[in-house]
Amino acid sequence: MSRTGTNTLGVKAVGIVACVGLTMSVALASLAAPVQQANAVPSYSQLAQSKAKKQSLQQKLGGVNSALAQKIIELDDLTNTQIPAAIKAAEKASSDAESAQDEADAAAARLEAAQKDKSDLEKKIKETGEDYDDAHAAVAQLARDSFHGSAASDTMSMVTGSKDTDDFIKSMQSSAAVSRSESNAANDAANAQSTQMNRRQRLEAIEKQITDLKTQAESDAADAKKAAADAKAKSDQLNALRNQGDKQRAYLESQQSQLKSATAKEAAQIVMMQSQIDSYNQQLAAASKPTSTQQINANSGAQGSTRPSTGSSNTSRPSTNTSRPSTNTSRPSTNTSRPSTNTNSSSRPSGMNYSVPGNCPQGSTYCYGHQTGNVGNAYPWSQCTWWAYIRRGQLSLPVGSYLGNGQDWGNSARALGYYVNNTPHVGAVMVFRAGQNGHSPIYGHVAVVERINSDGSVLVSEGGSIWQGNVHYDTLYDASAHQFVHY
Image (cartoon, rainbow, N blue to C red; front, side):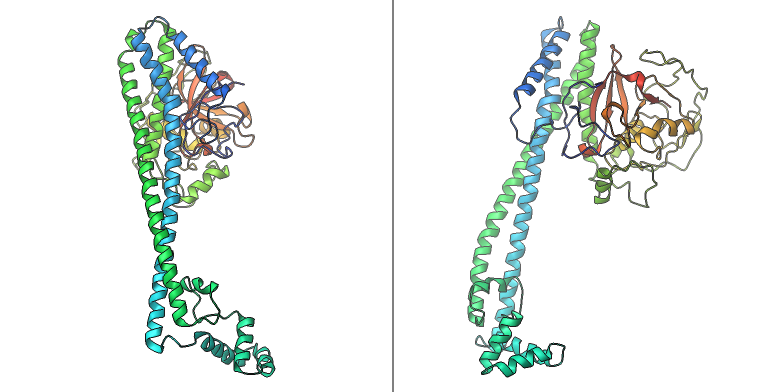
């Protein structure tokens, strides 16, 4: 396998990967909830892996000031253990609160219906008295209607076979299941009573039902309030941890000069990058939630190769990519010479003439000497293609709106004039063929290179339908086996 065994940290990370096929056979490194059953106690193997990871990090930080090393270890623990657990707890609390509120709303609706039916029945009693026989009246009306309809012969047989009026009425009640003139929520309470119940009896039954419903509604409302408070507390705890992580990351960035060994510097930078990717999740979470159409698209495996219908694909665009591109297509003054195709394994491919971030404003239709194919994020919400579009925009690098499924990005981009080769570079789109590295045998996959490590491995950020709009990271060791879309 080309992946490292790492943690995940996403919200609602359940279901089959329908994105441009993220692998299910390995534990993906990410910023989402750990891949384990909800509320499950970590297994022995998980605890052992966590301990081994911490020990490995400590070894890489050998010789580093103990206080600084501890800060790095704390940030790693925040990113890979505490924040994932807090996300899972916050999500569960939010789901519980939503369910409790639904129960409270349903109880309130039942109570309101019962109160209305009581009012209607009291009005009838006032108009025609409490002894008025609604059942007899309803049956009589049914009989009149039947004489003029297709059921006339059935009604006549009941009339001729009845000993008297009461016998006829009982027969009609049994046949047509007519027990009351009204069939609504409140009168359901009378089902336990006689079908010949008079208005006073039905009113008493409704009043008893209202008393019970009030008790239930008050209890459900209290449960909903408590659940909402718990959800807020869990959300506050998560935000506090994330704020702590931001402060830790900022501090470590200011202290990098104290890290003398290359191993220690790289270990710290990887920890900081993983923490930074969690901030991407916060940006995405701040955006509006996807519509039901987008949710269906995210789970269907569609990868944006078909142009969406008007207004169906861009309702949950993160703040970093909400605006449509300007109609001004003036071409920026960039070096349009095509770099060499040298595919050496250095962290900066030979001939690359851009840095990260690039100089291609978000939404640009033309830059680096070619059309970008950008008309807005047309990819299904939460797919890997959706995230790759967003991330390239954040880095001021060009990106197309209809590059197809993940496996198609290399060829589609090359056709537009993008530089594509087999050498990684920070900000480049890493393309996975269908089935490559365990990804979808139909759609393939794409990810964005976040850093290139000293051992030649690459840290990437990626999306996928299984993670419901969250960003994940992974470390891969077979970079040269992939295509990379540069600029």
